[in-house]
Image (cartoon, each protein chain N blue to C red):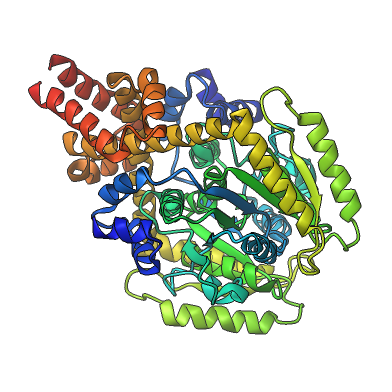
Length: 318
Length: 318
């Protein structure tokens, strides 16, 4: 495939086209990803998540600078809450990380977090593969929030940074707790603010009472002020050390296989669903069934159970 | 079933037990829901969503007061981001809407937003059915954020209030845009704050350029200050008027059938997946396949496609 050659050669236009193909679930996607597959596995994927206003984009910006200073190529996938009206991202490429707009070693791509067939996580997973095959050394995936979508996206990362800030109120603190399990590095950003030390102590306490040292590497905490470029060197060092350690210990391989397992399961899920909808003619009869359930003539679970029995009987016959 | 009798009679302990059954996907769940099915369809379901700090709980509190003053029974399902460490909700019943803690006409239940088999949306959908069958007139579902999870939860509502506040910064405004399509009523809360009028004008503008008057009822905007109890009467009136109109126009029936369709599809999805994992022995061979893909010996999509062919061949034989 011509496009695969372009991607592997690092051609920007080929990459952009490929990302559109996976994002819009266009024809040729599966073949494209199969062809790219052998070229993947070299990039490191960093996830950056945390509540709105935590300074994730500024932090990403600083980390890009660090990576560029070592000559590494960096791709950023910024997953934005999308507007159904503009049909795309609101914040988008335009506002984020503009300092790198003219650097050919940096590729920044926004993805809208809704309206994807198969979910944003599928599209983001696929985009990571494209950048990986295209020779980007580091791929950052930045998301807002802590919903299921964000957790899924974070699962595609080798290392997850959870960015927290002091003094964001109770609800934010609760959101924080919800994602603590998925963070590898806890970044207390805006560390010049009041309450930064207390927040750090809180995180340390929660980690202390929850740590499972046998199963997984130790979680790290880092204080930064991305705006003032404070603590970025240390964070960068932590990221690099962790990667080296995870490679050596086999933890990274395990994590990546776990990810593959998830992807393959999802694919089976999608494909078998298509197949069964065909076999059971679900589409055509759905309206009649719904009407029966709505009128209380049909009990939903009993109905499903009977339908499944029909299918199994036919199947077992074969 | 004894528990069904208890629920229909409004017995608090039966209701609480039933919610635990659906939340933990316990045995007897399907039969229970089938038995409750004929008793449902009377409650009105209000969804309340918006960014952290928008004042959703205070607003819910005020609306409970209004409903109670008319003698209506109210159930609230508060979907919290959950902590994996506490194993439950952080904010929980304890902090929310405490003023109604001793009122037997109000039932407040927190649900954690993660770690549910089949997703939180399934558990929340089921809980709504339980409260409906138990004779609660109004069921409020409150969520934080705008992730996929929240959108799913919101889909179970007859009317969705999107709570916004002035001056929450760019990211929040973007999040707002992401859920505008799902809001029926836009509540500009903390309307005494600077920027409230501008926010209202912005929402009006976006609604104006996006309105599809033929397909759906007109969206409403309402200014409130839940803390000061300002604008609550008007909001309550809008909610009641909208319900009456939607009943009359058939819009509510259509919405509820659409919801049933989604539920039934999901059930088919889950059940057929179980069945096929059995048939293809996916579980047992997964590790071998993953190893092959990891070593680049297997191309994932080609592999899936072949597996599906195998299945179809066998099936068609029958």
